[in-house]
Image (cartoon, rainbow, N blue to C red):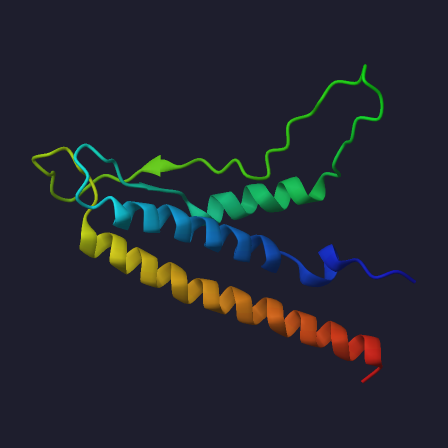
Length: 132
């Protein structure tokens, strides 16, 4: 009997990857808080996770002959949206420091939760392998 890690781990690895990607987007916003005409970006985590899980259900297709058509891998395609500021800036920058800090901290906490859940899944698998 074989063990499928995709079945055993579920959405936890995908959630962790998306949380890390969102941290990059939010940190980019924070780094550009004083850049004129910079537009704050973000993405909807829940819709991105649903799309990632739907994609995980479909097997990957590989080309084995030069005449085969290539199929694009959409694994890193998350639609980044522009954040609408509560108060517009004179220089055109839409980053609001307090909003970005709050979103970054919230995402960091949710990253820690996702990591702990994934870690507990691996601990459970380790116990199952040992027969405990």
